[in-house]
Length: 114
Length: 115
Image (cartoon, rainbow over all chains, first blue to last red):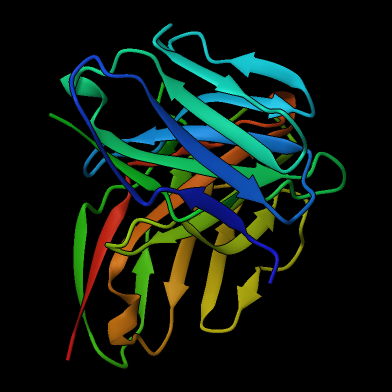
């Protein structure tokens, strides 16, 4: 089945220790998104890639970076995690042509910062 | 200003009964899409149903239907014959044509199905 995969599902890191979260997709969608979701809140868009074009949200902290080496993979790097970065991180994909541009989400990575 | 409003933070429903989740939206863009997602406690956001602003008929997908009232700017989700597995958080979201790749999410409604 075509899908969005996120690894790991659970990640524990120490305060200030860099961490990388991974997302891959078999949908061949050209748009990929990273969201941060804190407990009982709606997801918050951090950035998205339209093909190789990176689009950062204005309020995304510099501590968050992303890489997309090819169509299938996208990475979220948190350079110096703080306690406030503990959250669920959701990756999503969509295609850019034809309605409705539905975003399909992966299972998420739950990040704990000690 | 809030683009998507979900006024029900939590709801209880009896198994096999129907439940309606409210969603109102605010946009001046004539072209937009409305989405409902389900998020179980495991965390995955599952796409349920879509309604386009120009669609003449209400969208349906199995036990899910969307009650689209364009003049009132509402897009309520109806879940028929509730099952225990329907217990989850439900998010209403909107994509405006002028902001093509961005989804605006509501605050979500938690549904608990009782046996």
